[in-house]
Length: 186
Image (cartoon, rainbow, N blue to C red; front, side, top):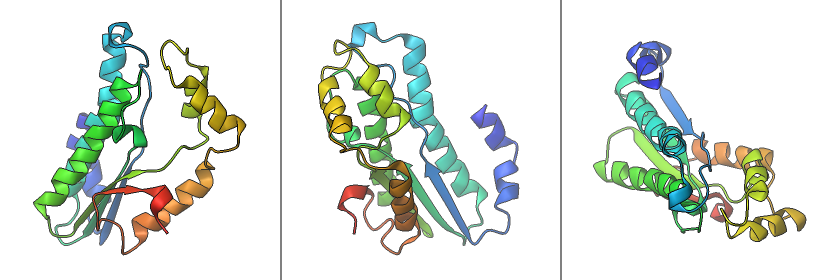
């Protein structure tokens, strides 16, 4: 469906007179969780499609659709899980690491008028966190750590984090480094 939409020309039509084009790739799923043998093929395919294929397709489409001289900024919302492995999260960790490496590789291309960054936002109090806390400790052995984060009030507010993320995306600092962590930005 996303490839059909891209081929429809809707994005190019939307961006026809753009001087700046911003893309935030934020969609993602943590499922399937659990040991490799317990992961269903359809769940793996869905996660890889949503977490990796779609952001890469949209990024490429933005570059083709936006006017050549327009400033283009691509922000992948990554995760600490893309930079550190967690038991039971092999698919989630791999897909977030893919976004990180995509940003690293694209930055090496040194494309004029393009800034890209894969940003880890920190641990946010979202529906995904509720799914993690509801998971079986068998599927996610670090389950208790996330219970503790919620109980102790150590999950970041998603609205405040989103505001900081947008401020960063619009700042001169965006894209200076292809990897960043929202918790480390001023």
